[in-house]
Length: 117
Image 1: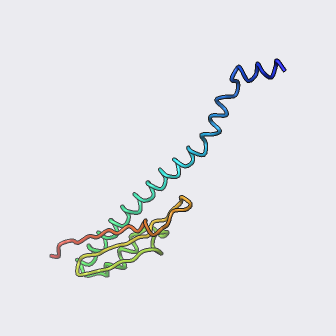
Image 2 (image 1 turned 90 degrees about the horizontal axis):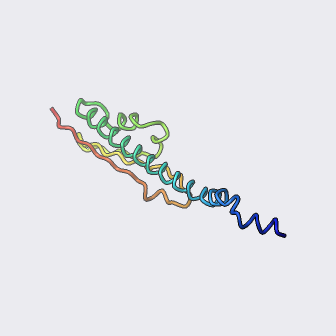
Image 3 (image 1 turned 45 degrees about the vertical axis):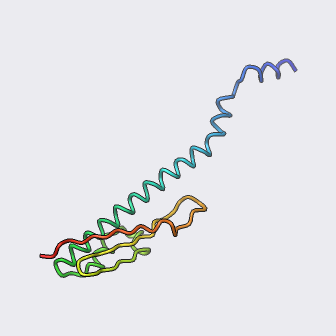
C-alpha cells in the first residue's frame, strides 16, 4: 500500500496525462488553422479566376469559360460565373473539413472588371 501511495505522491506520469488530455484540443486547433488556410486559398483562386475572365472578355474571348478553367480542378464543380460586359463575378463554394459546419456560410464571391480598350 505504501508503494502505491508513494507513486501517486511523486506525480510520476503527470505530464503524460496532461498531454493526452490536450491532444483533442490541439487537433481541433490544427483543423481550424487548416480551414482558414483553405478559405484563403479559395478566395485567392476566385479572385484570380475573375481577373482572368475579365481579361479574356476584354480581348473578346469567353470570360466565363476562362474563369472556370483558371480554377483548380477540385473547385470547378462548385463554381458559378456571371459575365456582364467586362465584369466577371466568380462564386465558389469552399470545401469544409470541420464536421458540423454548414457549407452555406462558405460561399466566396469575387469580381473583377478591367477597363476595355
